[in-house]
Length: 329
Ligand SMILES: NC(=O)c1ccc[n+]([C@@H]2O[C@H](COP(=O)([O-])OP(=O)(O)OC[C@H]3O[C@@H](n4cnc5c(N)ncnc54)[C@H](OP(=O)(O)O)[C@@H]3O)[C@@H](O)[C@H]2O)c1
Ligand SMILES: *[C@@H]1O[C@H](CO)[C@@H](O)[C@H](O)[C@H]1NC(C)=O
Ligand SMILES: *[C@@H]1O[C@H](CO)[C@@H](O)[C@H](O)[C@H]1NC(C)=O
Image (cartoon, rainbow, N blue to C red; front, side, top):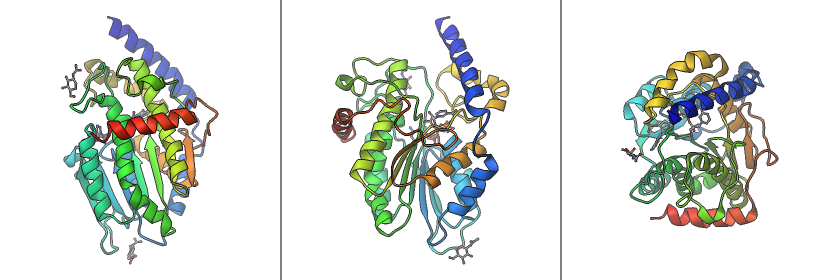
């Protein structure tokens, strides 16, 4: 019963939130699309990696990118679902530039050893990476659920795995920057929607709860982009919030209550972005971002550090050290 009323209040909050947030997207979808078409690289053939590109927002971004580059881009979809990736790739315009491929690379990033291995292999064979987008996500009502590496599964997918993936691939992103090409890293989660974190319990080993995890993951991502931008000047690091998007997130939840709540999406859908529109808007945020750190909202506006930023110099230092240790095991 508790779960039902909990869910009902979440849904109500969600409805009013979506109404307020998604109703008047700016710029218009047509403007975002035109911007994207005008700003995908044309002077060189770009390489883009979408971790979480097998569904939802990552899929929408990869599809928009493939369309605007007319297939003339190396595009790699990383995730677990090979069949989904192949179906998506089949819709891409076929590349005509030489040595250009669209491919799927399997990786379950819940485990850091997978993130290290797969990202390491990609880094070794791809000399320059222009766009690295990370949007893997899970929706669950589980309490703390540790992997064999001692990291909570949800935090692993929303933060630790992303961090390690980025870290391994950075040499190739730096090489793209050094060659005068685009060099951009974007994590799609919930910029502007984090909360205060406990620096004495990073990873929530002692104080895990769903609300604490929901506050921590966006804040860790905020701190991550700011810290990386300070360490790797010239490269763009973006943490974005996509708004409410009608994706497979509910359907793939391991919570039956959340899975069934997807039947409410027809009611919600007027207030939700489609995968296609979210793909264009998020790609717009990526293509328009300048060097350094930025946090963008569902309309692609940079919200700076004024709204709900809970980082600090101290937090950066401690989270970096903690994450290096946690993701190295
Ligand atoms: N949809 C929304 O309304 C909304 C709102 C705010 C924030 N967000 C955030 O945006 C992100 C993307 O959400 P979405 O709605 O696009 O979700 P989605 O449609 O469910 O897609 C999630 C993606 O994550 C991948 N993934 C999940 N677990 C993985 C794992 N262990 N290893 C590798 N890949 C994994 C999935 O690929 P495989 O199945 O192939 O592994 C899939 O490509 C999430 O972090 C979500 O929290 C979404
Ligand atoms: C793709 O690139 C190739 C080689 O650079 C070029 O000949 C071709 O016109 C491009 N295709 C499109 C649709 O831009
Ligand atoms: C933890 O996650 C695993 C893998 O998703 C799942 O099989 C298991 O039921 C979960 N355990 C709990 C206690 O939620």
